[in-house]
Length: 289
Image 1 (cartoon, rainbow, N blue to C red):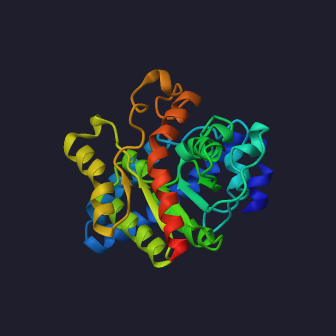
Image 2 (cartoon, rainbow, N blue to C red):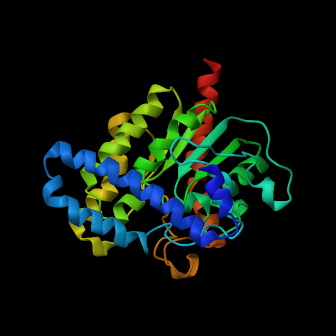
């Protein structure tokens, strides 16, 4: 897998297609399993597969990876592979890398990865730099993968848990939603992911997302409500819609209308500043017990 990615390292378009194929396979396998258990695979399978394929052409993470190929350098193997380097913003900005503090993994998709931007401008790295300046440093592992789904993130979880993180920020689910996956299936996978993290005794923060209203009011509302409803059920802190003030604002998103600009990522970091401080406080309180 690693050699295959290295072989296309200078061809970002081909490499992104490779990663998207892996993500689509993981999604299809997980959804098929859920639908088969519910007895609806025969009725929904073909339509759902077609939706997945079509959405790959335009959904979140369906285009070229970061211009600096940060995603390719970070992802070694989506099926239990690796995330390299937790230097955070300082690693590319020329600033002194942030050291010390708890280790926090951002398990996410192309939004966390900062698609089309230098990795240092992605919101997790911006947030790390801002909090470090305020005397609240943390070690960042940015595990954002373009096109990733909840099922895809789950395949990488065991490897990340081996990195002994103090907390995991979960930013997944919107690619499932953009592909029209039934909310019940997304929620099943998300609950399973969160419960695995809880079983490892790792602190969490979940970032809620929304899909465009043209998916229909029943689906859009059910999807938006899913995150914090599940968070309340499992006792996981949840930010209802962390892209508030950025999503839907043309001047804060790239031409695809989905991925934030540098200015958009600055707002996302600001949206998460208070929840992240609370997360750091929870980690510190646990260490003092």
